[in-house]
Image (cartoon, rainbow, N blue to C red):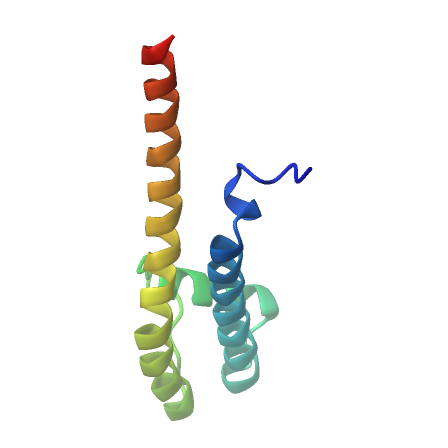
Length: 106
């Protein structure tokens, strides 16, 4: 019996989406670390705040290559990040509906 059957992480489609999101964040972190010379924590931080559109403004690419990469990184990663957030939201909404529907039957 799969203990993760009824949880988000147990769904193969969700697993692929989560893996893709983690991958794009890792790729961004590696590129920023190497191109901009930022520390690993700064590179990860910038990757996350960029793709979640938080953008505090405390970091920005200073090299032309870093700026060009950021353009494509945002175009590629933003849709993926929003897809993950939307999928998590829909999963939770459906769980609440299932619980409410089950309680009404009792």
